[in-house]
Length: 311
Image (cartoon, rainbow, N blue to C red; front, side, top):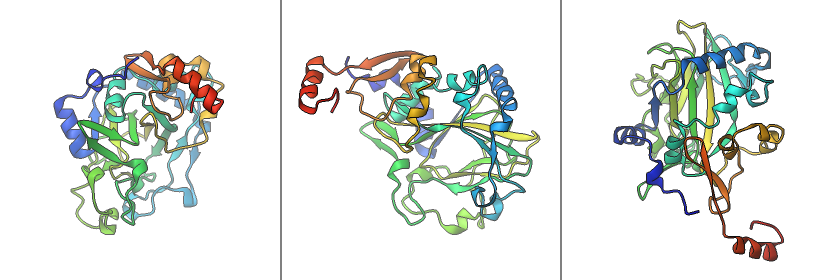
């Protein structure tokens, strides 16, 4: 089939596209039904023993303003939990409402990178020092996180989809971001990293259960200690890359035991990195998938030349 036309998959409004390009993040309100949020929370409560607390050098906060009384809890095995607890996290691999947005921001054939991650901040526990950004602390461009706009197309080499499970009001702590930093040409100054200067540049967005926060990892972000009214702040992070790009490594084989239990759309985002023209399965609308097929005579020739199906 021909390449999927980007215009056909555009999902962002002109306002959303402008704001994402300007700020490096976007909030999709009420993207997930509250019933599914409750299913997530119930599944996590039944598998809390699978979470590990960050302690000592593993704690994410070193700078005072981000430090709390204890480290946060992490778990990255939700896709492999016993049924029915794994089901909701597998469902979140491919959400019809979000797939066109991912196509617009990462391109057709987008793939998940990193394993999905669940995090819990209890009252007063650590946040996370500001990190990410277009440049590292030495001023070196971080291609693996980069954001680009060229020839009418947005490209995010690593895009984070964060699912909100608990209410976050302004000033509660939790996620913070420096809008526009995905386009920065200079490294983050240390005084700003430590929040020694007035921090009007640092946004702590208000989020409700069911909201989805989408941000480029090229945008400098972190988290403040949790002090909201909820006893804890729980988030899910699913990170995506363009079809032919990868940040993480060494985990794709971990899906072998579950791949046949997933829908075609869910399977498609677990493909390894390679270009669309080499028979990549793409999500084209809702949960529908199509293959960007390579001509059989070309595959036959590749088999002769390289002694394998694809070069």
